[in-house]
Amino acid sequence: MKLRAILNCDKHFGIGKKNGLLFDLPLDMKFFRETTKGHTVVMGENTLLSFPGSKPLKNRTNVVLSQDPTHNYEGVINVHTMDDFKAEIKNQLGRDDVFVIGGASIYRQMLPYCDEVYLTKVDADGGAEVFFPNLDRDPSFEMVEESEPQLDNGIPIRFCTYRNHNKMDL
Image 1: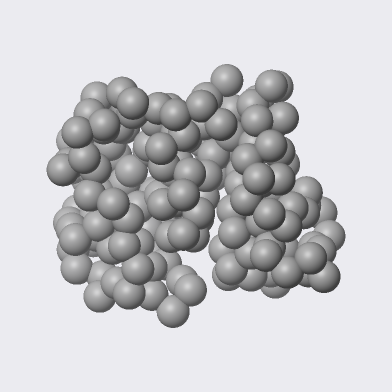
Image 2: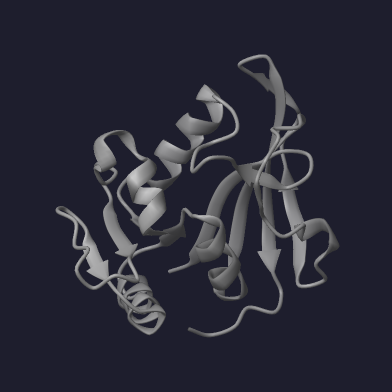
C-alpha cells in the first residue's frame, strides 16, 4: 500500500487562498474523486471545514488531525497529535492506499513520507497565499509521468506524478 499526496497547484506552486481552492477545475475534481474513492484520505481540520457543510468526503475513510482535543467530527477518525496522525496513517496503510489531501501544513509535514505525489499543474497564477514545495527543484522527487496539456474550464492543466526516491518511514 502507498502513501500519496494529491493536489493541484498554480504555476508558482500555489495551492490555496482564504482556506479554499484557487480554481474551479471540473476535470481535476473528477480525477481527485475517481482516484481517492474507496480509499483513505487524511487531512488537517481546516481542510475538513472547507468542504461543503464541513462534512467528510463520501465513499472514503476520512482521518482528520485537529490540535484541539475537544474538536471531534462525525463520520471521521479524529486524531489530535501528529504522532497519533502518523500512527493512524500507518494503520490505514496496512489495508489501503492513503491520500494526503491538505492543507499546506499537513502536506509539508507528510511529504517526506509519501511514496508519490499526484500533482495537477495549472498553467495560471491563482494569487495564492499558501504554497506547496517546488518538486521540480527537490532532488528527492522525480516526475515520472506527465499528461499532455488539456483545458479544464478554459485553463491549461497537466496531470503529473512524482516519485519520492528518499521516502522516510512513518
